[in-house]
Amino acid sequence: MAYTKIFEPLSFRNLTIKNRILRSNVAGRFDNYDGTGAQPRINWEVKFARGGVGAILSSFVPVHPRGRILPNYATIVSDDRVPFWRELGRQVHAHDCKYILQLSHGGRQRDIPTIDYPKGLSSTSRPDPLHGFECEAMTLAQIRETVQAFAEGARRARDAGLDGVELHGANGYLITQFLSSAINDRSDEYGGILANRAKFVREIVQAIRARVGRDFHLQMKISATEFNDALLPGEAPGNTIADSIQVCQWLKDDGVDAIHVSSGSSFPHPKNPAGDLPIEELRKTYDSLISSGLLTLRNYLLFVGKLTGAAFKERWEDARGPKDRIEGLNLADARAIKQAIAPIPVVCTGGFQTGEIIEEAIARGDCDAVSIARPLIANNDLVQQFARGVGRPANPCTYCNNCLVNAPENPLGCYDETRFPSREAMVQEILSVYTPQTFQ
Ligand SMILES: Cc1cc2nc3c(=O)[nH]c(=O)nc-3n(C[C@H](O)[C@H](O)[C@H](O)COP(=O)(O)O)c2cc1C
Ligand code: SF4
Image (cartoon, rainbow, N blue to C red; front, side):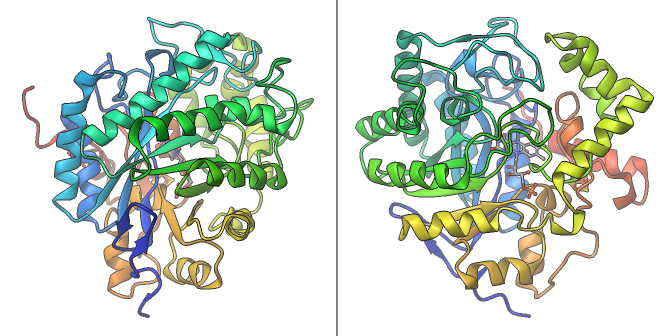
């Protein structure tokens, strides 16, 4: 079948991309401990550019050293980081692919606290209920400093010749921690009613526009429905789609050019990335979640205990919903947001890997484009397969989430051994990101 919608160019206010498939953000520990960029990240991004996606949404890129969630992620915290991003952009652009950098701050939600800032900052002083790392509620001076850090990050991305920026306003990181009715417990002008909780992100958007002007692409990734009570008893549900529609309307007024729809108030979350919970693999790689936070015993039982681990896996997969509904699971939210903020384009993430499903979602007007993470990790050439009329890859992503749980410790890549002729072949593919290597 010819996928005409998928291969129609998409114009945002300040940017046009050649088709409707964006590589979704995927963070991996490819860089140096101090957050300077390294060649493997460039090699990794080029794989997807070569595979034909219209644009790449970068990994989580911290705008401030205190916003890091793991060591070895390239940051954009100072001007000396600009040449790395410029070189990365240059190599991606060589494949007629655009590059949008995800401006991020982890707040209280981190995977490994770094040695420089053992405590995170947040809208609250409550540790996050999944990871259990300690944090401090931000002072007004810290809020002002962080807003400026986002604006400087956008300015550096523009100076590096990249094509735009995305605010990571989803999945439980700092912007979500302010937006969320379940997390934000402030009593000042940044907490309470939705308008107050949205003040932080609106100030960021306004600061970015003041710094880079109106003609640089700016989009925002949002957890449209938070499902904050999906897993842990006693938690409130968090923001609903109605709350997020209002936030997106404000963001439109403030000058945001597109919305990227996700879900879930934490990362990971049963609904994002929706799939299995490979508990045996996770217990090898999520050590720091056991040993560094305040929830050592509980997380040890959840991840390592035989019975408790099995119960946790079952609860996670129940909260995710049926496996055959993973593909396009955020489409209803994307549609509701698209209708409310037209003509601003909406990109939807979550499970996409079948040509017909993507084509129909765009044709129905549920979204203008989709972003894909795991199915593109599994098949870097997925877009070229669609271009050849292949509807579903012969060796698809199984949503096993082994890539996800390996990411805190091992190089990012597909870790589903059943997809490879041998374990050696899988390892070879994972390590291919280290070639070519240059001395820097
Ligand atoms: C290993 C891994 C790393 C991810 N890193 C990020 C990230 O840095 N920023 C982000 O917004 N989302 C991140 N995500 C979420 C993806 O961008 C995507 O929205 C989600 O996986 C659903 O899409 P998929 O079903 O196509 O994988 C990550 C997902 C995976 C599996
Ligand atoms: S490990 Fe491979 S098959 Fe499993 S979810 Fe990740 S990309 Fe898909």
